[in-house]
Amino acid sequence: MEGLRLVFLGPPGAGKGTQADKLQESFGIVRVSTGDILREAVTQGTTLGEVARLYMDRGELVPDDIIISLVRERIVNLTEFILDGFPRNVSQAEGLDRLLSTLNKELTRVIYFNVTDDEVKRRLLARRVCPQCKRVYNLITDPPKVDEKCDFCGTTLVTRTDDNDETIGNRLKVYHEQTQPLLEYYEKKRILKRIDGDMDPKGVYNALLEVLKDDLYKKER
Ligand code: AMP
Image (cartoon, rainbow, N blue to C red; front, side):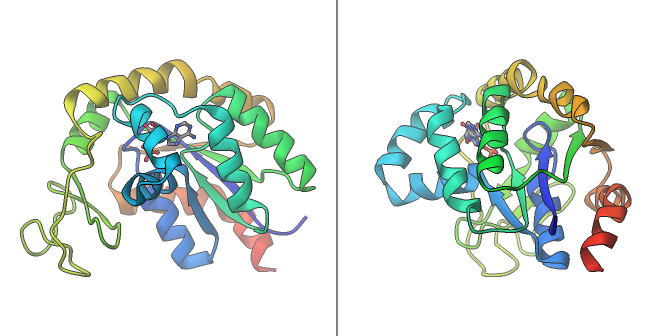
């Protein structure tokens, strides 16, 4: 079966989006981020956005049926993709399995970015995003060249509304209770690879290429 179909798993702020962007840039594997799709809907003020915002502001998960149909729409015509932020619980993972089997596809690999809660909090509180081109910065480890301005489009950076102390605490709780059981789910399927996500982005990317090297080699042949 051709193509790489990946899931990036890990707590908020683990660097899943950053790493998926890099992999997309280098290998053309499309990043599908449920968080980005939902934020876009919120910005556009669609019905989906209005519903999603109620959950996102509290750090809760948006209902599974909404999420699964969003993902179906995005991946139905893709041979290769990186799912970033999906699945988030066992029921979504089962939904994804059913969806892929109707498309006659399989997941190639699930990558788990292991990051401690303290590091997650430190990163999320220092995270800033460009509302225009969506690039992500960290005021401590990866600051913009000009204070609070995007390096690429000059737009003033903003803090995500869910990157505050209280919501971060709830997102971590939801992560441990609902998302972490997926490690066992994918371990049993023998497609899980673990990476130390506490390293800097370059270190994590090298570790990612290392665990994916056989899959990437097959893809290039
Ligand atoms: P993220 O950008 O992945 O951190 O997601 C931000 C927020 O969007 C989460 O806290 C959830 O409220 C919502 N969200 C993103 N992905 C999912 C998903 N797969 N299932 C349910 N809610 C999600």
